[in-house]
Amino acid sequence: MTTGALTKSVVHPALYATIRTAMGVPTVAGSRASIRAARALGRTFARLPFNRSRTAKAVDRLGVVFPEMDEASRRDLVVRSYEHLFMLGAEIAHIPRLFTEDGWVHHVELDSMGPTLRALTSGRAAILVTGHCGNWEASAYLMALIGFPFHAVYRPLDMKPLDRWVRRTRARRGLHLLDKFGAMHRMPSIIEGGGAIGFVADQNAGDRGVFVPFLGRLASSYKSIGLAAVKMGLPVMVGCARRIGWEDAGGASRGGLTTLGTRDTQGVHYRIIVDDFIEPEDWADQPDPVFYLTARYRRSLEKMVREAPEQYLWMHRMWKSRPRHERLGRPFPDTLREKLLALPWTTEAEVESIVERSERDTRWLAENGTDRLP
Figure 1: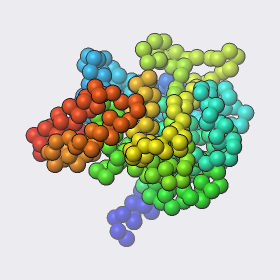
Figure 2: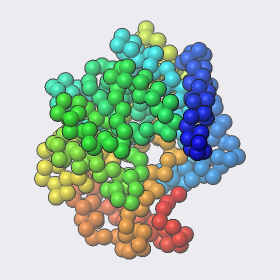
Figure 3: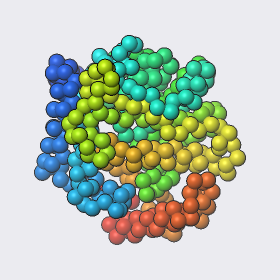
Figure 4: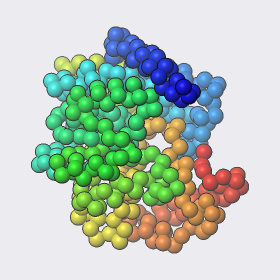
């Protein structure tokens, strides 16, 4: 038996049992206590010596996004981002118990959902886009729970027993997970049935992605989302599930909880926000519809991140892959500059800022002998 086969047959089942046992602890402790404990653990983890380099890189990324923010404030924001990450783990353990047909209304507020609900209740297929801001799992789980056929594109877990458990528990409420490596082949049948397909769309998409502005730099974005929407004529809705009732963006009421009226949120409370609703007619007259659509949903994701930056995962390398002209040390392409200027919401000053940052990145790559940003 090979080492890989031994790991899958012996180590993975044992590790799965350990993880499942650990996930049961928050359920026993209760949601409030477990989320508060997870938050403290995240704060401690962020400050551990072995994590110093990753934290420093996240602080540097925030310097690009918020140049007016001093280093101490950026470092504090990174710590709060780790708190958010650990709180997510505890919240996800409780969502299957709290998000029921009758119980979800105690934990969720719907904001600006009119066009989205009208589109989904009409039986019309759609693409839903979110990012690593707020709780992306909660938004997908809720959409399936309240009766909309929902499929979420995800990367299968390497540990097969855990992957099967994740699929099974999500399917109980109507949330079906699509393997990202075969999602495009299944999309036509889902669309024909009037289903919605969800993407977490702020991840680095590699050297062949569509490079559009995101948080002050060009970022590689998945081409498949724009291609699917344009080819099939699907509306694209951009939103997130934002945690409320704990610490707000300004740092007030640290550790506090919100109870709405007589409703007990048990420490799990979100506001579902749809920031943009993009219809096919919006890109119909654009010279490059896929570029327009990609840039627009990335712009919406950026807006939501800036509104609650403590609920974003700044440790992600969202600018890792670089466009070809930067990797080759060439000037900023005129064609790309023209595409950016053609976007209805961009100003010349904003485009020049992107160009200037790209030129700085080109020099940095050359000086450091690499084609990736940290």
